[in-house]
Structure formats: C-alpha cells, structure tokens
Image (cartoon, rainbow, N blue to C red; front, side):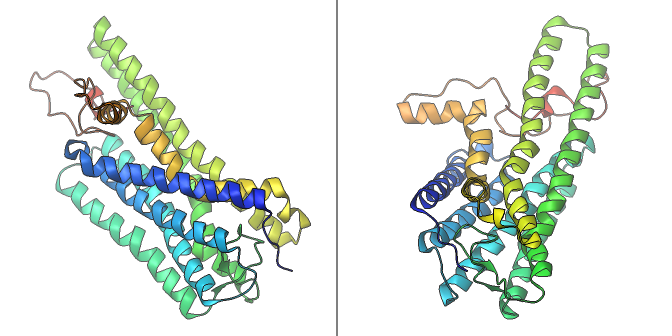
Length: 330
C-alpha cells in the first residue's frame, strides 16, 4: 500500500533539497567568479555540482508531490533523478580517481586532458544510456516510497525490479563504497611517504613545520570525503536491503528521514568541504560579502588541488613524484 510522508518528514527532506541546491549553486558560482581557481579537480567538482543540483531539484519535486500512484510526471521525475543521482556517483569516483592519478601517478599535461574527456563520456554517457533504457522498457514508475522518500524510481511491480534497481543506482553506489576509501587511502599513503622523504632530504625546521601543517589538513579532508559519502548514502542502501527482505522496518520514520537527507544533501556536503572549509575560497567569499579587498592568499591560487609546481632546477630530490605545492588546498 502507498505510504505518504508525514509533514515533518516532508519538511526535513525538502529543506535538505534546498540546502543541497544552494550548496551546489555556490560551488558553480565560485567557479564562474574566479577563473584562477579553475584547477582540473575543481572543474570535475563543477560537473559533480551540476549533477547534484539536478538531483536536488528532481527530488524536491518528488517529495513535494509525494506521489501516491503512477503518472507521467512520476516517470519524468524518476528519470531525471535516476540520471542525476547515477551521474553524481560517477563524478564522485572520477574526482577520487583523478586525484590518485595526478598525485600518486603524476599524470599531467595532455594525458590529464584526455582523462577529463573520458570522465565526461563515462559520467554522463553511462547514466544517460541506463536511464533511456529504463524509461523505454517502462521500468521507472511508482514505488510506494519503499525504496524512496516520496519520489519515484523503479516500479516495484516490475518482475526484474532488483536488476534495474542495481543498474540505476545501487550497483554504482556499492562500488563507490569500495572505490572511494581505497583510492583516498592510497593517496594518503603516498603523501605520508613523500612527507618522510622530504623531511629526510630537506631537514629545515620551517619547511618541515609548514609541510606537517599542510599534510595534517589534507589528511583530514581525504578521510572526510569517503566518510561523508558513506554516511549520507548508507541509509538508502539499508532501506533497499530491508525492501528486498520484506521487512516492515523499511517505513521507520527515522530511517525514512535519514534516507531523504542522505540522498539529497550531497551538494550541501560538497559545499561545506570545498567552499566553507577551503581557506582560499572562504576568504574570497567573505571579502565579497563584506565588500572589501581580499587578503593575499598564502595557498596556491589554483584552489583544490593546486596546479603542479614546476620541476626543481636545483637537482634536489623532491620525494616520490610529489612536492608540498601539489597538496590539495585546505
């Protein structure tokens, strides 16, 4: 039977959608306002923000309508949210993969440009192909909010609904649970090894202190990225498993609210990490709001992460493919 959202559940999830849309919009705005912050990684973050913005808008409409049966706008909303949500998974992993390749494997120049094109093809093309196939085969429709929070997704009446739930989101979500921690762990290990190598070759107190500060801040952000993603998304996975098991706990109010916030707040979480918690961007925003000139930034102006520093001309070893200037801004 259909399960309508209570007013408190609807209000909380709608607020999460609005905050996520505002956060994604702020990320897009900072990219448009300051060209010198347009590093390759922040370009990838821009595309992730666009996917999150579309996702928040489609979820907002779905929660506002709180569908109680099949309709044409239910299918349209389900298709848009499926495409945007799946694309967000791909772009989130693409950012982690890019950071791994650029920091650990030192992939730069034309190879990095080719990599960006590959990310576009996969992160937009695969979700679009899956969504078109799902709509064409009439797999997207009303789901009685068992695996959603008011919005439409895969029609629970379809015989192969589990397969399509996996293809339109859950499979990529589960893969991201594994890929994100693994990639960021490899990046962190590389930074730690480079830190040790630089300390050995350049035993200068001021340099070592500065590097230790940067490494500490970067380590915190590298830990938070996969942690926040998993904390937000795990509730939808829990309800997915409960639905497959036929458990009545799938409609537990707290679980429904956590699912609604987790699916809709990704844009807000990214804004907190990469705008409010990134000193260069935060300083410029405060200067813009206060109508005063920004202070000279002590970090690389390229944003997160800075562009690679030019190779050393002194012949000194810089550690294994890494310099302190290549650390992501914090």
